[in-house]
Length: 276
Image 1 (cartoon, rainbow, N blue to C red):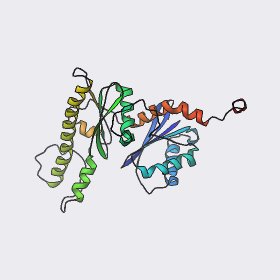
Image 2: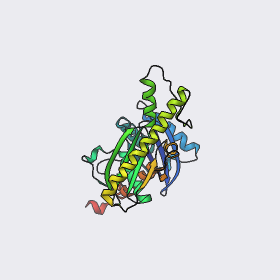
Image 3: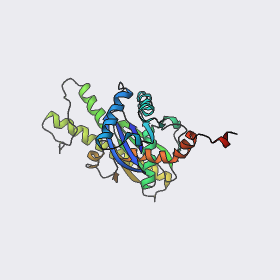
Image 4: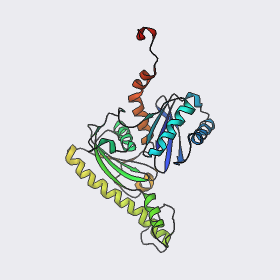
């Protein structure tokens, strides 16, 4: 089995793959101060609850946009699974041609999403990840990562509205059903949720026009959405073609497949004949 970690600013999404198929996934809150032992105990309990044997985990892969969590999860991987984790970063084969000015600046989650979306749906594509930040990525049918946009996510916007105003309360992120609202809670929900829908709709339409100049006006461009609030945003706009909540985990599994031969060769002990 393969244990995959997708570490975001708000949540850690974990998945267990067996023979390339996702068989179980969980979501934990990201805690920068949590130790490897604390995470290890929780993960072992989750595996045990689902009837899965921790000893059957043959490898670990990590994608993180939270640098402070990386050492903790690497330590966890060695201590609890006796595996040195594969970490998404420079030197890992993805198949992507990254056109960013500085490819090292592209978030690991954006690369993983692009690999999964291209493998599953083909290009050209626009990928919208609606998490702590809302990211937009453009990729061509030639597996070129062309770039994108980054905006504050829905939760960040909600937190900022609460923290930076004297009288506005914290609200649940849900649709009020209308924009002419008669109380403060619904007025905030309307502005936050429908405002985010409008932002996504505008950026996707503008990105489609720019991407069409690159790939050709006649090429259909699919829009794939993922992330915690993807379904909510998709309910109010027409620009999203597919919502795929498992996109990042499946991308991790695909990248692992591209790299596992090299990893296994590196681990294999040489035979006496090879040592001569």
